[in-house]
Image (cartoon, rainbow over all chains, first blue to last red; front, top):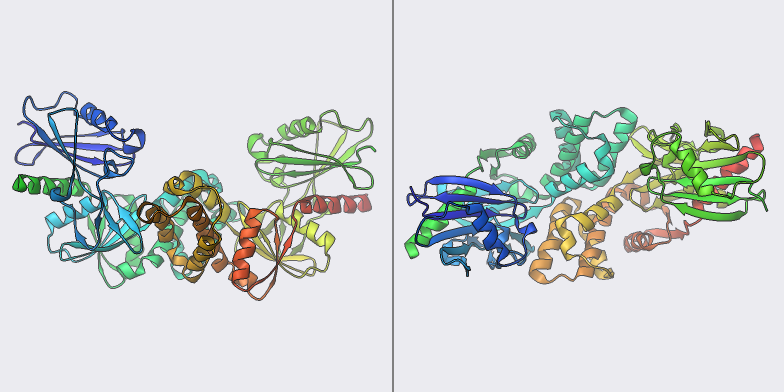
Length: 301
Length: 301
């Protein structure tokens, strides 16, 4: 089978590339660490894409390349202007066509989504949401996308109605690796310590910054175990986020798009609050969203 | 005049050393970057101290060395056990006598202070408080010591009654230098942006994590100026701290021990809440506290 389309999830630190055949089946998939952060704006992206494709270009013809993520940021390959909420998930019709040196590529970068007030932005997550809607067009509720910058979005009538971003994941990374707390943290998971911490900051988010230093003090004075310390750090941050995101999840159907450990943490924390939660395996959501954009492109061509 | 005592504020990143004459006047003062973080526990500290003294040892006799700070931590020169709240500020009688290779030095490390519940610790700040009480023995109220780990302490009848530590300063450093927010921050100060941010998180501390990412979004979408972005980051963190520390400052006399920009920020934020605030020049508070400990040592000797 020969390659009919390339689909790319191009973030800050990674490029994930899929080759699809004419029936939209995956021929191969590969990862590169040439994320946006390593590349100068413009042509460096085309070179990185060609390196990722390697010897696997089809022998003739032009191939569409559908891209989502930070490659569409101002510092990326080319700026793909944001769609504005409330809006449908961006499709190929909204994509930015990027000129390439190679005549063999037709590159399209999908827009991100912005919200005017409160100001907020996403690039990449909208394509995961598009993948969810491709599978389940009638989805009506809230999606939670845990990550470095966790997003909460209200979805109704195929539109992203509103969304909000929390820095929880990035704060966990910084505090666990580079702050004074790193001395007391270790591997492993303590579910009780996590849930206690979630309720501490949900009940009183103002206490977070003091509770954080309390992890250090409890390590020194009370022998807080390294796994419990790490779980408590995660719980304090997620509890404060859930207090802030309450208007999103309270009384709503919540789908967590994430199959990994961080998705488990959000699920446990939300269920402890009595929320109705479902998990969606996010592994192929971005691919499904990119595939849906390619389908739309073929229909408009 | 010859050196009668060395006084040292030995923190994680710096050693500050003063030489005092018999009348407790400062003969000289020097800074070294050989903080606790750079030294192996034990004898490396004696070598670093002798390097800082250089050729300025008195010609004969033994010299007392009074030390406060992280040199007394478990990973320091020698562990100086904590005093426990409520307690007077530690004096020379509570100090840990450390054996040295040199017979010319008599080294005393002052204890830090711990609180059992909620668990909390300080090492160094208690000596600043001792300096304040040396100047103003009748002080009754709350002290705020802004820094990497800001401390709030209730002082009454010459005792540290209780205290609480907030990670505000360290979070500001990490977020401003290493998070996604670093792209939008610049030098300068915007007092309005600071105060608006303080009231945003004081009114609703649960919103902090989303407001933090909002700095990035507002930079991208609304052209938030770099100085305003930096001031807003500071205000969001300090506002959340003030919400958490409210039981400390509400209706109390608050002394901010800090003459620099961060002290200004706390003063402005607290005054906007109607708090009664005074500023204390902290430059020599630690020295005054160490001097008081030496005075006590001479009296007991």
